Amino acid sequence: MSQEQEHVEPEEKTAQKFAKESRNIGNIMNTFLLILVFMMLCICTVLLVLVVNLNKEVGSINTKLMALQTSGNQPEVYEKTEDVVDINGSSVDQTEAADIAEVDALENKLVWDENADQSSGIRRVYLTFDDGPSANTDRILDILDEYGVKATFFVVGKENYAQQYRRIVEDGHTLAMHSYSHVYGDIYSSLDAYRQDLEKLRSFLYEVTGVECSIVRFPGGSSNTISRVDMHALIDYLDSENMVYFDWNVSSGDASGLHRSADQIAANVLDNIEKYNNAVVLMHDASGKNTTVDALPTIIETLLKSEDTVLLPISEDTVKVQHIH
Ligand SMILES: [Zn+2]
Image: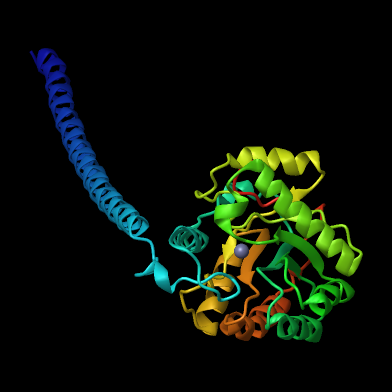
């Protein structure tokens, strides 16, 4: 009997111990499950917050896109085309006025594909002046000279400015071609009309300066929408003549008719230059565009302060900044 009791007791103890251990394991499992549920809840909450934020982000991007599209549909063009004048300040016909307004709107709104700019390291800035020479050319040249900076002048054909064409060359800037007449309706009426206009400018500049120009900027840029000739045909023509064209990726926003203060012009240029390793800056050398000249010292001083930035004149070796190819 005592032997039996002795035998049973340990069995009961074992059973009790087992039950106790089971309860403990059960408790641990419960706690573990609770923690698991709690963690799942946390993850769910975080995911929910992320999704809500993402939705908000998408919403705001959509709003911005819509705002961009709306502003793109309503470009800052002139109320009346009668007020539009050409680069000499002379009045133009309705068609030309509409073309000038369209180009101005494009010049101020163009967005450059940043991925197109692959080179890295030192930032190269090319200041370019279209439509000169003008009453402002000497002032621009004086400022560039003062800072020892070289730039590029995409000139048109003008009598009585021989001294300015020559000074551009003598001061070490790049003398480049824009168009002789700069009349959109004429130069973009046919390939032949464009070719004749450019040939006229090329021989005119050679006579005045002795320089054979080979760098070109299309009036309105290669991406202009007013040419009646396919721009690729004009580009092929330039290729065949070993001439190279440059557009721009930074606009100063000084297009004719839209008044910009010197501060606005400097801010437009400086804010946008930061995006590119090769920044080609569009400005205009035209009488009446005094704020462009006034903005120059600020632009140049700021850029010269930056150690990794150089200001250069465009050459045939310059990285091509072209809107269409
Ligand atoms: Zn122009």
